[in-house]
Length: 402
Image (cartoon, rainbow, N blue to C red; front, top):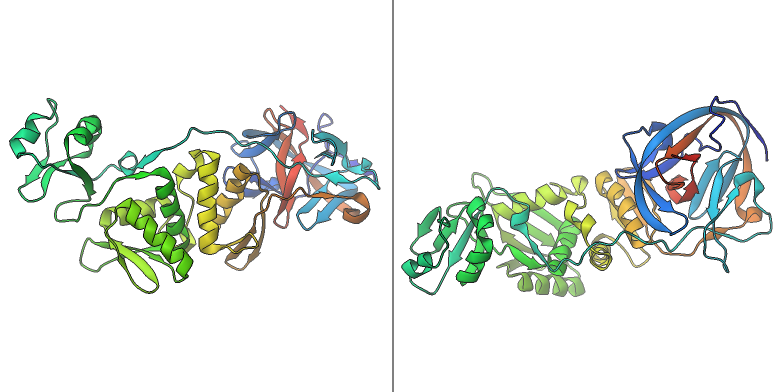
């Protein structure tokens, strides 16, 4: 397998075909469209640790000759014959490299699998006031109002009081004296403004993460005409999932209504909060920023909720949101899963598995005559990126490490 690269950058070798995509911090992106502002998901071949590194260079190089195509159900790479390919074997799990044009025909190559994602501290509770700027906290207490006020520290003044519903505190006061207020009041809830119903604001992390998963897959927010009131709804007809959602909402302390095919509660505050986190409609869905810093087990629980909503038993997830599809291509890497997808019009079908996959040159490798350009990619501090074509990705070497 030979080629004739004619580019000026003789210190760089290899290269990807122009239709190759790599997984960036914004999802899959054509290598030909990368710039130094892009950050890629990378793998340290010595430790198999997942990371992220910025692009330092991406340069086209003229090419005339035979490119190497490695193609299978979970792989589609078209690369320069000098491209370095990381691999393992059944008996040796450490990562080694082989040039694309020097693959041994009868060798059984294994793609790199079983990497380690970054670790994050365990999250026990999630407090939505950490993500909001406009709200009021309502406090109620069994003791007389004067006694309650006397127990508050100096400077902790309510913004208003209602003889029936208690004292209210603005965000600045609440966050400044949250520990004191939570120790003195019998109950604290959150409201979006005067005359609105109060709701819980602090939850067990595993419950709130599951709630977000169900909202992303089955949820919606409907605003009532001429009223600052939103209906938050989670649609569900399957009996086994209805039981799960009902138990979840009960544990979280929501006062909700249920029909034969949905659960719902009214809250303009939660309506705004959930749409700001997850997008306004099914076509605008995205992963909330907070899920990226969850520990691995909580990430996996969140992913399993997504699959229960819009996935199937074969590990296929369906969405009409391009943003969500791009997010999930990244999110799967944190769970040891390589992205694979097919796009049918607006519908994305994403496939997730943790298979120890591989290839044999005799069955999966061929040469393709090419006249045009390849793209040589350099990444800061890393030599391996997640790359592929036609929605099939594997760890692959880059041209140089800077």
